[in-house]
Length: 481
Image (cartoon, rainbow, N blue to C red):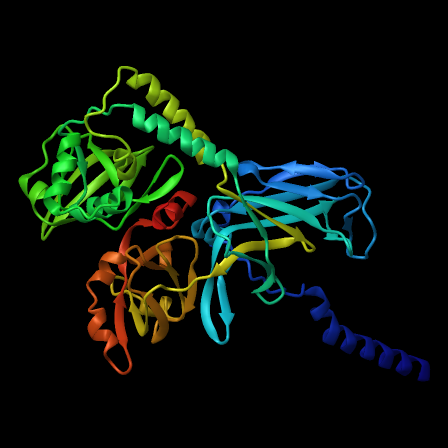
């Protein structure tokens, strides 16, 4: 009997132990991650390569990037050197849209001032062997020589700390220009000056302001309005008064749509009010260099197709009356050179990596003409306001090399760059709808009056974006890339 009671006590103790401790053991510990792709199916893919870790190796990647890997550089989590085949996974991010797609935050806190990093090229590198995550051995370093389209010696090197979601300064990279890029540019300049370009009435420029700006900086002359019109007309193109904040991609590079020469592809003539009145225009890419242009004036709208022919600064590269016989051959050669230029780095930045993960060639994003305000955001076009309260707002400077993440909608302190004509903000709403605030909204704010207030406050209403947030193409379109 005594034995039976003792046995019951033991069973009871074991049962209590199981109730208290086993439920926790069955649950996997939730590890917080700071890299969260907003559209997992649209994430930026990795380049995957296999190497022999016991031998030194050099990996050549797009845009001239090189990874120089020393022998015996990898260890497992226990510090054991790896001799089996190693898989290197590598990817690069060239702009804020690609970084956003990868779910990598760019916020940076310095001296209690919240800003963001402005990238000249970000990358992520991982190493695996038999599905085990590897680390770099103590004393080993991978040398990265990364090709970049962004010039300048003022970019530093930062590493992303995945344990707390912060960026840490790591050092100063070496920066060198790419002589191949300069050679291609010189060749393009020569070819541009040798060709004719027969324009007709279908060719047009958006507005006087853009033509003035490009003329001033390209030709180094302060042209008046009449001189600008005369010069554009001499090429055979029309100068309209259409204004847009949209950006376009041409031969692998990003431009303001206003700074381009366009050709009207529609057979119907443009209405007089489109040709003569001050209008606003939005663009939707169809394919290649062809866009659908929607022109608005009060309640009137007109849509037509148009194609980008070249940047205005390229148009100004040769005299209007300079014609030659071998135009077609020169154009073909010029296209080949532009294709080469689109995949060629302007500069190389070199740094020695002592840790795998996400790293960035950056500098701090600093608005040129900052106005600090308390912003109240709202999206009146959706019914259930509670669904987005506490959500995130993304502020994207016109350079498209950075983005700042805000949480919450009420009285958020932000710095508006009054010199940034392409500033954009957006939020992701229920059903993958997008609320957007672009430069056209910002233009309607009375910022000089706001700046005079003791506590500057502004209301920023999101308007409904015409597309949903479903694919990589949607994101690139949202960012204007």
